[in-house]
Length: 192
Length: 308
Image 1 (cartoon, each protein chain N blue to C red):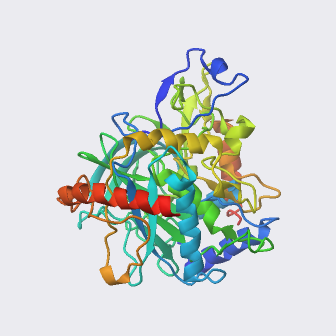
Image 2 (cartoon, rainbow over the protein chains, first blue to last red):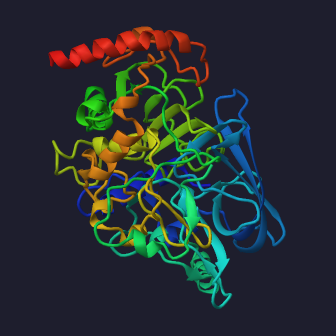
C-alpha cells in the first residue's frame, strides 16, 4: 500500500509539472506508468455480479462488484479467481446515489481493471480511468481495450503531462499490444 | 443508473454534427431514463470552509457563492433556480443521504490509498467529488460536494494569475454545481458507450466525441476537460444557460425554498431560505411547511429583486 506522504509527493509533482497553473478538472489524470505503479492488481475480468446496499447508518449506498479473473497482468489473482471491488454509489430501491467519476460495472461485460487494495475489498485506481471495457473489433474479432468511460468526471492533466499523455486519452487499443506494454511496465517495477 | 440516454447509431450521427449546431446540453438520467432535477426553487448548500492556505475561509465561501450565482436566476433570466450558499463551522459532515447539502473542504480526512474502500467517496486521485441522491423518477433529494484540500492547493486564479500549479476554486465549483443540478457532460469518449449506441443531448441528437467536439461544446462549463490555469468555466456558455433555463423554467417555479439543515447558530443566512428539507428527501415530512412558506418566500424574494 502506498503511504499518504507518497501520494502527497506525487500530487505535488503533478502540480509542479503543470506548465501554466492547473486545470479546473477534478480527478488527477494518470498516465500508463502511474496506473500500473499504483495498482496492486491488473487483470482482464468478467463482471460476475454487482449489488448495492445501504451502509450501517443508512447514509450512503455502497456497491460491491464481483469480478472473475480472465487473465492476470499484475498481482496474485489467478485466472478464474474472484476479486471484489467495493465503491460508493449505486441504486437501492427507489434511491440512487450517483458519485460522479466512479466506474460503472454491468454483469456480463469484460473489462481491463487496475485495482488497489486487498482482492476481497479493492478499489479502482483513478476512479473511472481504471476500468476499460474489452470488446472484439467488429471487423476482425480482435479483442480491443476501449477508452475509459469518464463516468461524469473531469480530469486534471497532471502527471508527466508534457511528455506522456493521460491513459484516458488513449484510443482503443488491441488487447495484446496493451498487455505487452503493461507487462513490461510491471517487469520494470512501475514508475512514477 | 445510466449516465445518459442512449440511442441506436443508425446513421444519425452525421446529422448531429453538421454545420449550424443548435445550443444543447446533456442531462444525467435515472435508471428509468428520467432526467435528474431538483423539485424546488432553492437548493440550500451549506459550506464548511477552512483555511485553504491561498484562500481564507471567507474567500472560499465567496468563490462558492459566486459559482452558485452563476447558475442562479439572477444571472439566468428565464430560470427560477436559486443555489443558496450559507456557511457553517464545526465538524464537517459526511456526504450522506440526510437532506443536508454539504460543500465540504477536507484538509485532513481525505481518503488515502490505504483507506478502507467504500468507507468514503474521497478517492485519492480526486480533487473534488460530487455525490447526488435521486429517486427513480429523477427527483434529486440530496447533493454534496467534497473538495480535496489535503493533496491539492486551491486559489483564485483571477486575483492571482501567477498561482502556477494551483486549482481555481470558483472554476471547479461552477462545474461541480452543474452536476449538482443534474447536468452531465456534453460529449463522450469513443468506445466508452455500449456498442452501437451513442449518448444523446436534450434534442435527441447524438453528442460529439470529446476529442473532436465543436468549439462551442469545448467552451461550455460542463465540458469535461480544461487547459491548465483555465478560468473559463466560471462563466456559463450558451449551452449551459439554455440548460438551466429549460430544466428550471421560471414559468414553472415550484415556489419552494427549503432551509439549510445544520446547526442553526452556525449558519449565516443568505438568499431565500425558509421551510425544511424537501418532502422527497430524507427526514422529510416538512413538505407542507415548505410549500406554505414557499409562496410567502417567493413573494418576498421578488420584492427584494425589485428593490435592487
